[in-house]
Image 1 (cartoon, helix red, strand yellow):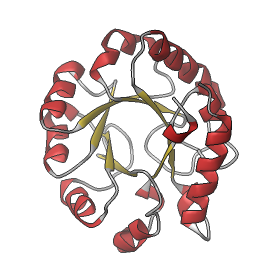
Image 2 (spheres, one colour):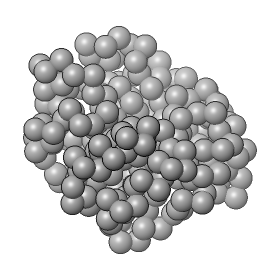
Image 3 (tube, helix red, strand yellow):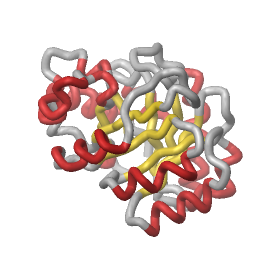
Image 4 (cartoon, helix red, strand yellow):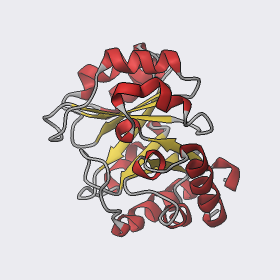
Length: 224
């Protein structure tokens, strides 16, 4: 990979939910839109569902990355693919049949991404790595924005990047949680190439400038 593969995915969890279209326009220079779907069961928070995601897909030109923090994604994930999601992420601790779900999403023309929480090991994914387009390493506990970055997750990112490289795969590594200008070089050096940033983007006076600064910081540190 080259530094040009770095992608920034602002999380609308930090946007103004009463002015989502406006806040989507403010991140037009991003590479993806990260949409957190929470069900008040898998995580304690409750956010949005299929109707809102459908409208987001209709009003933005950016690919929509739907991160399902919900129970039973085997049942619900295909609905988000039907509504226009570019990718659907589901969690190791929530799915019953990850390979079957990944293949179902691929058959629908949607990318399948797999998420790992801080307390979960990444090694169990290695045997099914080829089934996924991207692996998401959470650097906070899922469920809330604005949490402190967990640097101890970088060993997980490095082991995953080494495994991807060893096997000659094209799998992306996404990092979500506490990413900003100061932490972007840390995750990029470890081998992540898709960075989710919420409060660091929407908490800035100029979200578009913040995106460029985070991307530049990551590109300078990215590890081949």
